[in-house]
Amino acid sequence: MPRRIALLVLSLLLAARVVPAAEIHGTGPLRLLLPPVVYAVVGVETNIYWDNVVLTETPEQYRFEVQCPVGRSETRRWTLVPAAKDTGDQRLSLSVIDAKSQCLGEAGTTLRIVPADAGKANKFRLLVIGDSLTHATAYPNEIARLLSQPDNPAWEMLGTHQPGSAAPGVFHEGYGGWTWARFNSYVNPDPKATGGLRSSPFVFSDGEEKKPELNLDRYFAESCAGRKPDAVTIMLGINDCFGADPESPDERIDAMFEQADILLAALRNAAPQADIGICLTTPPNARESGFEANYKGRYHRWGWKRIQHRLVERQIAKFGGRESERVFLVPTELNLDPVDGYPVNNGVHPNTDGYKQIGASIYAWLKWRLAERLLTR
Image 1 (cartoon, one colour):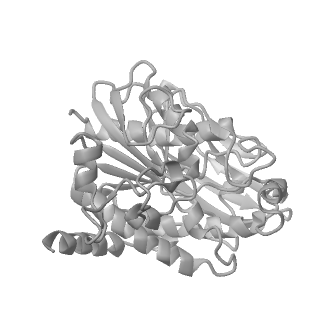
Image 2 (cartoon, rainbow, N blue to C red):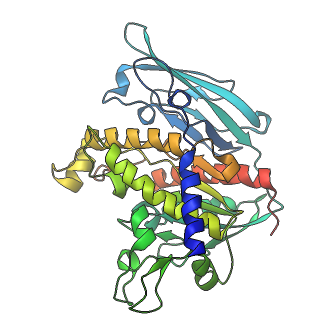
């Protein structure tokens, strides 16, 4: 009972900090969404795709103007491959201009560029949690590839799931169709079930008469040989909210956040020193054809785009500004090319290039945290 009370208290504390709306989007009738910080690493390309930051079906009808000491603007994006001289914090401002040269929206963010050798003398453990985008294992593989380059720290991935596509040393907890709630409570009575049909790796039961319980302490003890992560990334939200009403998705988002608070409290209780990176939900394929191929008219690109945009807005509000709790936003929604980062026949699952862009965004955040914390396990 004391442990359950502690989890409840942590859950309430985690839910308490809300970023004011004025800190999330800029001024003007066309609301922009920029997270407070965008992370980058010397030598690794980072991008902000216009279609990913503003809610419109026709981004090509607007002019996007960026003010930043580094990088350059192109037709569909702002892009940068940082040089060593660029390290540090840079201010980036973005304006959206219509055909009449009227400014419809302005917003800003901090571009945080870290050296290529950030954290190289350290060791750290990473736990990756997610849904089908994680199960595909392409972006965990890319994180591992980048971390294995020279001037990087020694790394280890925790987890019980290693699909056949996983590179050596790559483990995670990513399963197709999963939600925050499924990680918190799902139990399959078939002990032989595998993949997305298996019970949550975080839920345990000691018999038919005892209710299954979310227990991260036991997960780390039994499934990770007592090892705990220095960093955790969580990429969930698509399955929680995909079927919401595009006109009013907040009820589904509220329900998702209730489950998120439970899992975050359990993680914080079991691994109090771990940094937790909340990956902002990725944008859809820019083509309606991807949704038609998957959903045959049942769901459409513009519907999911409206839900996703609102979800990201609320993720920034809920999880932003909580660095003192070791909770951070990872801007995985900015760097993913909504055209060339997707196949023509899938609405929400990127192609190889898109998954690499997701991996690069997470890698940049990890490198900053490694440099900040100087992890020495």
